[in-house]
Length: 90
Image 1 (cartoon, rainbow, N blue to C red):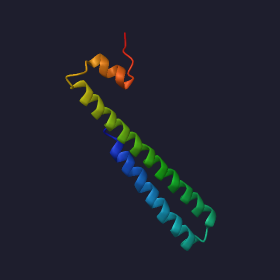
Image 2: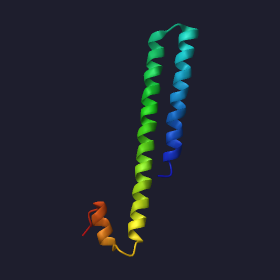
Image 3: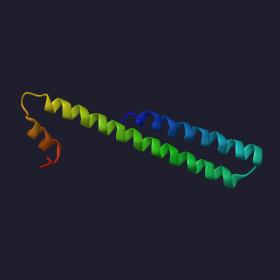
Image 4: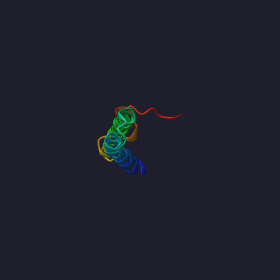
């Protein structure tokens, strides 16, 4: 969970750099084939960053819900785990 923010930043930075690199390849090298490869790399980096962002949001929401249910006076820890779908280990 600690490394999710740097990983998200890294994938967004690589995606932006791939856009810049794609433009430079078209202008300087006149090589459209490599530029398209860089552009698809950009889309892949943005997609990875998007997935990690959604995963981080899901994990933080799950932890908030778990703490709210667990610290509630109405639920015991067993009821909280069954509500969230967590299997108890025996």
